[in-house]
Amino acid sequence: MRREVVIHVVHRCADTPREESATNQKASGRNHMLVEVDKHGMISHARVRHARSPQIERGKRTGAITGIVVHQTDADTLASSLNSYKNPKANGAHFLIDKDGTIYQTAAIYQRTNHVGPLKARCLATARCEPRDFAKVGVEGMHQIEMRKPPGERYPGNMEAIGIEIVGRARLPAGFRAAGKEAELTLDELRGRRGIYDEPTAAQNQSLSWLVSVLRESIRIDSEEVFRHPLVSRKNPTEAQGANWKMQVPTP
Image (cartoon, rainbow, N blue to C red; front, side):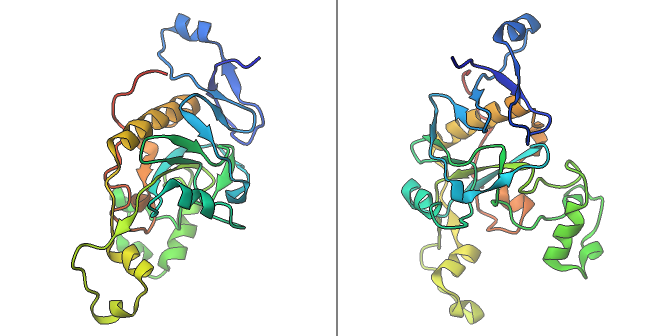
């Protein structure tokens, strides 16, 4: 028989998370968001539908989960993203949130997926370094430098981050006309540069807030370790700009 548990994972690559009983939680006076997570890393809850896509999983994590990265799919429909996840070696995140707020788990949380690109230097945001420090290394060089730092001193990468995708597309502004070298780009390339992502729906933000709360509480992720994708990597700056994961949500 299944039990509803709060998981506290120290080594996320372990098969079975540790459990704490609801009785002990009440006795300690803590108000936890309770969810069940099986040994594979799949959430069992009425708000989460399973749509696991093995093609996007890249093997068990070798370190702790330390952050969450919020994305948008650049697709109009949930089906489009789910279909793309069926392709060999497809990239994707652990969760998808449809426009009506329905949450789909598409990868086990103990599995790494490729959803974060080359990392930006977090020290630039905290004024602990300067752009000139990376002037000669390029994008990949900066990423390699960052990956030598411990989590917390850098942004979470694919090994440490849970990815959440919100269904939404980047669209070129009305009347946009490419000029100069941009006129040689494909429509998708133009959207990547100049497109503006859809604003998440109210239902999506409600579900995002619930999901982030559940994951943070269950895995003990610091509130400062939840990021929009463009902050941690080089993506369209409007991606997930309207994402709000701090709305008040009921428990569980």
